[in-house]
Image 1: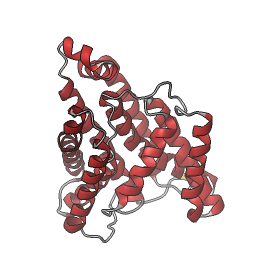
Image 2: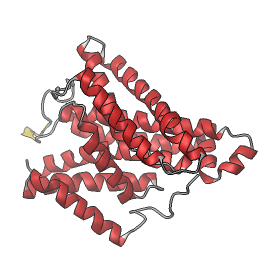
Image 3: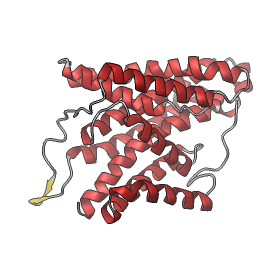
Length: 291
């Protein structure tokens, strides 16, 4: 793996972490709760899409159905593992979301099986060539960062330019004031969890062709995404984007220089050092308010 392939591999991985991490930002901003079932949403999206494609469903339809199912899963997480505890001003949602994620992971083991499966993709068939030289990357390595940046920009416009987005921002700023002006805050919170879960599903689906699909893939992915969210700052979506890309490139570079065995140790050491310098994250300015 040379420098070019390392760079694009890192950007692709970082973009996947970023999509999942933006989901942490969305839920934390709107209601103060972090959805630790995000990793299971990524796994569920990838596994369901693989099963649909294996059953003969067209790729575009499989994508829509998988992401939609994960959005519904996000609603279930909010209703079952978050809302009851936020009403009681309890932080038990933390363990409840972890537990629900583990239930999903183990449930998919029985349905999907424990054996990793390869996800077919039209964007990993042949490597990219430039001026007759093989760059050592697939088209998917270029597509993934473009998709992540496009989604991040679209979400930014959605929050600032649409009525639903403005209502979400109002709910995030002051829920009591939002209720007074007639904004259905519970609906906004539920929508935030659905959106976050859908983003995680997209991340898992894009990761699958580069690795494999298995019921345990969401655990590590969710952990790295949360680390990225902390690195970028839970209160800053664009900080998370920057942090995700840096994290991905650092992970790939460390894997090239020291071997994959040192990747986890070195990348999380990097995060600790970064947070020692910027406690609120790279672009974070304030702590997330509890509901």
